[in-house]
Length: 431
Image 1 (cartoon, one colour):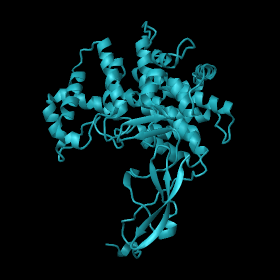
Image 2 (cartoon, helix red, strand yellow):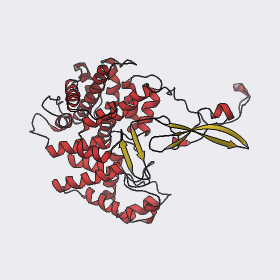
Image 3 (cartoon, rainbow, N blue to C red):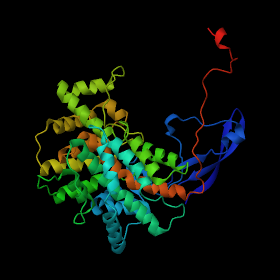
Image 4 (cartoon, rainbow, N blue to C red):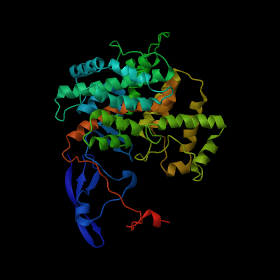
């Protein structure tokens, strides 16, 4: 619960009372919902960096101290002690599941992992080379044609079925989209495997291979998905909530989140990091040359994977991702210059005063793409993997939004800077 206090905004000598809202972790906000009615003025904040669009009990981020909590649990504790499906349950239901509920949730995930057979034909109609994110977003919104929507006041059993259906089928859609892109037959999910083991098996097994996911890779996949499980009101979650505020169904809202995540400044950033590193190697650039280009405002080059809108210190997810990457390379030595360049570039950047002064530390995208590469995922699958991890967070926010009494249709204001009213001129008199 949040406490309400009073504040006052003074503009041109006039005072306007505002409620001051305080969150459970001490975060503060001014309630400006009545500001325009009181003063005729609106707030201006491109990018909404200083706007709280809702009250949420799901995730807390302190960017100055590098803290990330899910339902009150530290990310570090969840990474070390939980698998992905437990964290998904936590985000969606608000508590970690006891053994009986954990087994039931896992059973539902297994039960709903298959796609309707009629949906298989959809994959065949995408052109060769279609980006997996395009396939993923379209297939998710198509689910609404095959499966019923969740009623507004759905009972818990209905919520669990809808949630596990989407969590499980997105994993299958993601794997099928990859198989489509390389022209291989689809591998169906199996009751023998866990959530992440099933996904790896569907991705990399084929009729002519004896692929079997190593337990260490399954554990690593769980940790990677947990890293992405939720991150407060980011661009894709905000897009999902924006669409949800119209009353759109869950599938449409998740599809909107996927489309927003696709961008290179959001979920596509891990793909952009690897492509940047490949370009550095191809051009033969030294770390010094790369950093000089990044600091040159006249150069369009961007150092992908560094800096974050929220974090003013090392991204706690990036710390974990770096450790996971190091452990993977120790376990599975890989002769790939990309990893050497990435490590040296980070070392040089953190020693550079320019980057330290601007709090430009590696973010979660810097190392996750490298891990996916080492596991054998192609670059175009990186944002798909991000979406797979972020799905429980999106679902949790969608469910929370539906129960929020303050929720309204999102409709931001603007500052109009176009021409003043002009007299209409008939076509024959226009110059």
